[in-house]
Image (cartoon, rainbow, N blue to C red; front, side, top):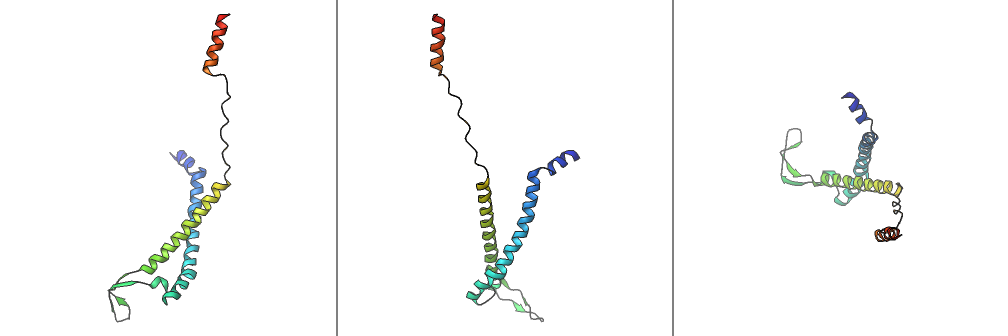
Length: 133
């Protein structure tokens, strides 16, 4: 069982998936910082507030003794849009990477055509002629 697991773990595809997962997680952090640090502030200029803090308040909350609002029910649409932008950026970059890898792969050459030989009718005619002799 241990030997089978070692063979499974050392397959190239599994290692490639692991490397891709780690790189994807790191890339996601880069995209999140790009969206949070560059895109959100620019969009926030339009709304005159922090883009991630944009929300639709359904039920007003009341401030507690420390000034923190408690009991507020709100739809956090700014945060949702930020995460959606992150997803779109990551999906587009992954699409471009897959497209580049597919373009770099060697294009498979079509299999050579089978050698053309005599047809069935020609073979039968040849056998008939040989039998006549």
